[in-house]
Length: 312
Length: 312
Image (tube, chains in turn cyan, blue):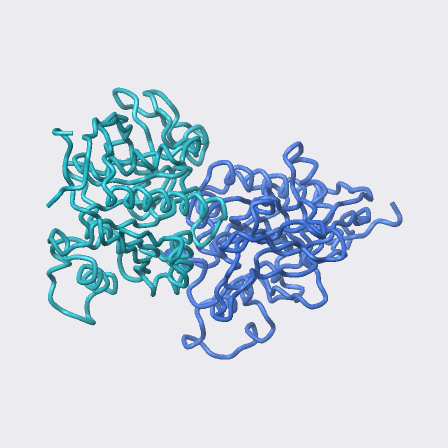
């Protein structure tokens, strides 16, 4: 017990839906739980469902002016000004007021941010830090509880790529990314998977707050390596599609020489890297404008410390 | 031969993409063929690729102000006015000028309008009339040429439901609807299916124009019966999802008592009709705002007359 990490109780938890207004599972779940929160109530933690981008939800669009899930930069959050700012920058400041301030002791303990993807990623948990053992223990718990259904862990910690996500306001930010689901569509299978993940996550927090100690363990994660764009012509238009051998193969190894893109005239562009990578977010609709056909990851196994509630 | 229908040569053909700016197969194919039209060139017919809604394509949205594919009403097409009209109404008037006027002898012979759906419809040809034997012979030819891949035929002829589609400008309007593909995503398998259908369609026209006679045949079609909306609460928000037993089961029979919707609290709503129907456009993203979870159809077999080129 002596080498376990102490973490404060997670008393204040939020569940964010509609950070992107056309990702319907989170929009629907937050709407359901706002009307009746019995399903997400636990005795030792207060959990609030929250709709992040109501104007984008209304329009069934990803965003109005700019991507809310990239808007939580220090510059935006400290920016003076009001109505003249882009809608999502205003909204980021509001969310930071309510659930933050980001990086402060007043910030919420845990934020679950509910997302969908058009990629064939299945159920995925997204973490921003490899040293947050509270979150790592939580995803370990969720993975076990979801089995035999798989639940992957994407680690976005990266020296250059910074995301400035909505959930980054919390002390322990957790992204849920469930797919494949088209934008603007609600599929019952995706909805139910997301619902089960949230249930297990809240059960974990309840147990943790109740004093349960979680022993050291190991968690397999996929650490973001680099973004790969579509081939483009001189006008910036894409000139090839994700190759049918790569399409829908999120999390599977892509080896040097494997087909990666198929040009409109039928020729194949192969992956040229030095060794295997694990692509994910393959052919995600929202990432065409971000110049990303997929992101490569490396698979690694993290050693997770035992954790217990700190006795203050 | 004496009972065959004479149809005029189909000399002017257009291929429309981007009627909906986020349905990417048609947008990409029209773009490819605008740069290099060798693939769609035939000796006896002139074929023009055309991007219908460039502003919606630019935004990767279905439309800017209103659905272009419902805008070709007599009222819109004869409406005076300019810049103050909704963008798609102006665009409908322009398209009607270039490819119509609708219902006139000057109208284009055939327009293929390329669409994608988030529904699991596979390759579908959409016809507006059960008495256009030229089109029925064409879809018969395409179905045979596409085999063993299936190619369904949806007949939208209906006493009440009117669509006023973009392609309705032509003498012989043909919709191509290929899915499943999320909005804003280009999948190579869907792209290639659509490309093959267009190839076979142009081959048919070339043969017809060259004097080939097509004998009487029978074609299986699915005739639109009625639209079914999602269950909704008193605020108009949906209160149930397409049931997992119905999801992705386009073209399969739905019998009385079969599960149709699943409410957010897990209960099932069954289909209550008098007999089997064949649902399609199941859970199409763009139809939430049209209050349509799916459309029911009846399966029927049409007797198609022999056709030949009229000798003027």
